[in-house]
Amino acid sequence: MLNKSYSIAKRFRRFLPVVVDVETAGLDPKQNALLEIAAVILKIDSQGQWQRDETHFCHLIPFEGSLIDQKALDFTGIDPDHPFRFAISEAQGLNAIFQPIFKAIKTHHCSRAILVGHNPSFDLDFIKAAAQRTEITIPFHQFSTFDTATLGGLFFKQTVLAKAVRAAKIPWDNDEAHSAIYDAEKTADLFCKIVNLWESKRVK
Image (cartoon, rainbow, N blue to C red):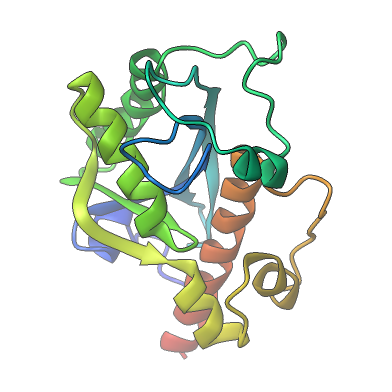
């Protein structure tokens, strides 16, 4: 059995792991629009198992002058002009996502958050670019991340998210994929599964 007193702050050098996924209108964080962002805050249960705690999500209005790559929209299936997206500005969206993270950092006595993602430099670069445009402070470490592509390759011999998730025996629905909230939650499940497996082997 894992140590029930084990805390998030002690596990990752006072970093709070937060799983993030973004959907965008291209590959350039300075020119292409940020369209969706989801963040999953994690917790440790009474048995010492890592699991999802809170998910925060929003649709974003493309920033003024941003470029929209139709190929990216075809891949994600996002229509930036859909009336039922209920999209908000980048500033509103970042504040809505960041405030619960700052609160969790304080609650868990952490120093800052660390972004967890599948090839996370992509997500972090888009978040940093949006934060720079809106002059909003980000809760994340500026360059350090946890990459589930690398961890999935190490633990399950799979680097593609869908394949790594399935190899971890976590349900995956291709029809739901490529939305920020779905991919973030599945990435969170994969990360938690890997950390829990590691801890179970480490304490034996």
